[in-house]
Length: 114
Length: 114
Image 1 (cartoon, helix red, strand yellow):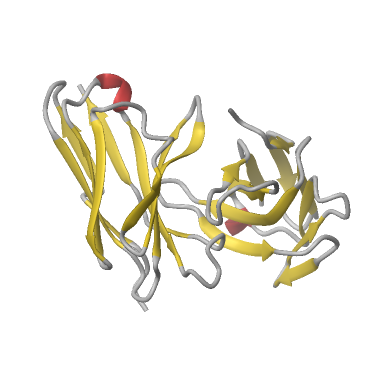
Image 2 (cartoon, rainbow over the protein chains, first blue to last red):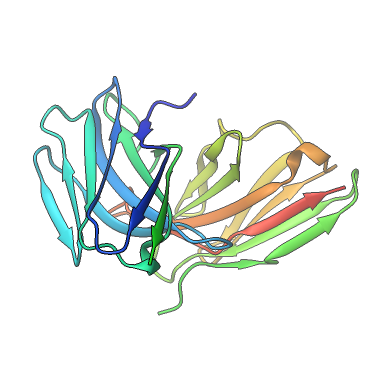
């Protein structure tokens, strides 16, 4: 079953605003990834995180691997209309989970009003 | 470099028919993953291969589903016989063994079973 809780489920913001979303689990994870999916397309990898406490940026996007290894955050600064889409967190659970076997969150639907 | 290639992009078939979905991973990637995405269940891992060998097929719904990877550049996911509940978007993803969790997705095949 689903092990990642992603929030919020949806966001409606004005262009130029900053966005923050997160993913939590009751289990420890070894890897966290953030993807964006546009309608009719496959998820596109935004940021990958491999160490607890790691903070990584990709343009206006910044993601962090939580210190407890049970959560991750994605921030988008100065949003623009093309940021619209569904954002997914994904991770590989610690404790013997095979490399590559990811669990996905349910997604955050982002709408940006011009 | 070309990304993950999937075909067909759309498939409409009638219940009971055989369906074959195809995937070409990114050149040089050793791991290949098949996912299914539905509104109700989100993204689910069906099966994945390392070096053309199936590693974990615990996500395959039932015996009607089968997957093969005859060589490093090609994989198929077959459903026989298809049922309306198989309607979903099927994604193929690939990654390198050096970074197996960092998966790159194809555009998906939208399957509709009538």
